[in-house]
Length: 585
Image 1 (cartoon, helix red, strand yellow):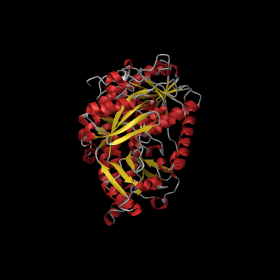
Image 2 (spheres, rainbow, N blue to C red):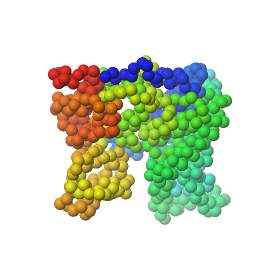
Image 3 (cartoon, helix red, strand yellow):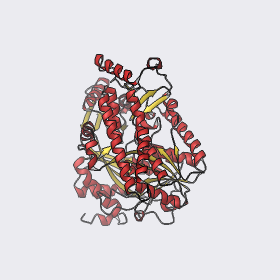
Image 4 (cartoon, rainbow, N blue to C red):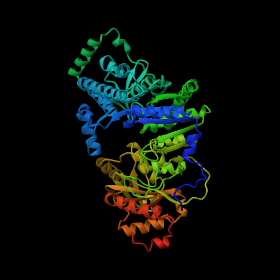
């Protein structure tokens, strides 16, 4: 079986050539590369391509910015990742500001905002200094500083004057109520990045226009008015003093967060559909007004409602692509990274193979449905869902190294491809094994699922037998206390003698993903591979439709299993299984 698509099929290179509009994202450390990205934008414009850019919050890994990083951000990174990141992350510090506001610690909030300002100005100034296309350096830096100040002063104004204790948490979003809507603290990072890019491109004499969220916050979050009468005619200094007095007499009052004051879009599917339609409609209106007269449109990654979801800037990219396509434009969505999609992680596996094309169904398995599935940085599921529904060509590639090739994600006519094309693994939290004869009865799965739903825990159910069921989780999983609580629930509901719960710690899921894998010899190859490697899966194989098999291993065995699966299922895919049995792997 060939692991590369035959040349007769449409390729990513063709999709890039044929499209009139490119929709893509600059984010994270890449968003800080203003000069290089502007060069790329100009190169694509010179080839007649219109571009719609989504800019997410800027960060840097340069160690010189470590001194601007607050210790609480560092502590959080160590807790979550086991180590501190180098450089400076704007979004992490905006979230810290939100936390400080909740705590009534305005001094720290102001200090952190000042460090964001210092980092952003220094980063932008460095880009100007090295950009040969910007001759008047001093004037350019001053103009960018004014843009940066204008955006960050919006939050500073809230710290000084508005009801800074009223922080609403909506998923990952942090909101402050305004008289005419809501101000997103976390979304400020994307708004700031958008404004910087617009000004920078104009400094290079590139034609550019902005696509913005306009007044969607009330539409999404409601229009509950503030009691503004108490704020009228109060000076900034008096307002600040009144807040300090309030903290002295009740230090917890301003620190109270209104958790779950708004359901996230994922928790309310009907509202989610309407919100996304409202956003797309507004995007479509602005694109229609701007795209004919402008070669480049720039949007921030944040929109009200979207900001509550994981990977929200990628969802913004997908919505912009959908809006552009509805405007009868030939559009391609670009996913730009270190490399196109390959049969395994090139950083861990040798001899990986380029995947020239992939159906949306397989992409969902690879990138994960709402966070489940094999780890991959390419496309988060909400964005992929929009792209698939609108049948938008999506190309994954490295724009600075086109010799690596491209991967085109689109639905195409089935031509009988079979076998594994990707082997991946992902770490998971503890898996839970339920054993009970009661699961044969009606309503068992509904009750189990209902318990986790009530605790806001997303469950992945590998296939079960008559009396066993294995649960894994795609949003962090239950805590130790919740596992004990769940076990108590099971015993109270079904009796201690009729049901048992076992926690299987430190697991990794290993995936064989491909086309019609149940019609191939993938399972036979996998069993032989595990035997030769001396590893044993803890959970039974599970089939995801016809696109994949999944196995669970102790974390120490997962990498070995992944390596040998790639070898026998992909590198030796054209070798008959009988010959593989004779090999010393």
